[in-house]
Image (tube, rainbow, N blue to C red; front, side, top):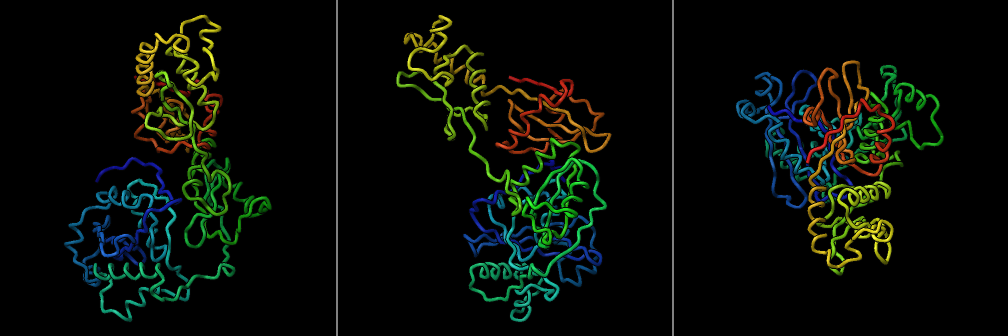
Length: 456
């Protein structure tokens, strides 16, 4: 089985290209465990085409279970492990709305991804929500009473998905059994949580995250939530069915984990850090005279520099560094906005392309060489922080001043190159909030805990 590098990638939920209907067939192992052995998918664009993924169970299932369920044991055992199908599934699910008959099916799929180190964060749609009065969903009841299909057959799974599709389109009338939220309430036990930094997630009874928060002391913060709820936040605590915690070892990484999950999950009770301003981008162009130039924009264009900046100070500093290092025109690098020659000519009394047209060809060649070097340069910084326990360090990884992610590593491992940490890196997206959070790292982290590596 291949080892997957653990990273946190979430499927975007702002705009969905397709609705992907997912049905999972399982075998019982023990009294309560359900083990998936077949996934059947269908998208709303092609309702007659089914995708089937057979999965070899990770644990041993008795032969009598296969016999009772009328499932071909040899065929199941000959199926590939889940990790062999994971990449294809991720590609299918990316940027699409996943539809499950109920939360149980989503949690089964999520657990499969978790076993290979993939943090499967998405916001699925459930057709039905189980209540005490209804043990089976209405589609199962409909098939049981109206169609002669064995529930473990692939044909049954395909028929089930067809009815899911029709249900969403409101062409099949089946009684929905949504619970009355005003009746629901559960006390939350927080006695097992630690006085340690981390991120906490409030989940409702459908296992959906409704709030994400971070704290330097998780247990203390949770106690304040439920003993003296703040009037400033609008959380309906009666909807909190369970709490999940991810310990971070330090407050800096807690902030980064909190921000990433708020943006990915968009919980209904989080109002900050949900939206991302467009980044500043350095774009290459030409003047009317054919002189190469740089300008700040918020639009992606073919010849952008690779970095994305989220405040004008950082992008202007990048232009300043580029201009000074390669001795380029301050006017055409977007630093000075003036009609005449730049300060290289007026102040330093030096030659510059903005005052002498005969220098254009030489300047453009020098500019292209500088631009290529700048794009290919890779300056990495690794910031060492406190880990989640005494034998571990946490780290934040930056490339060219841009946040790449965080991770955890045994503190007896020697780190001298980027390859030493990349296997432990949990890659993350850079955005306005991550840029804001990591902006103070150089001041907060001791110099002997910062490793700088430059490659050309």
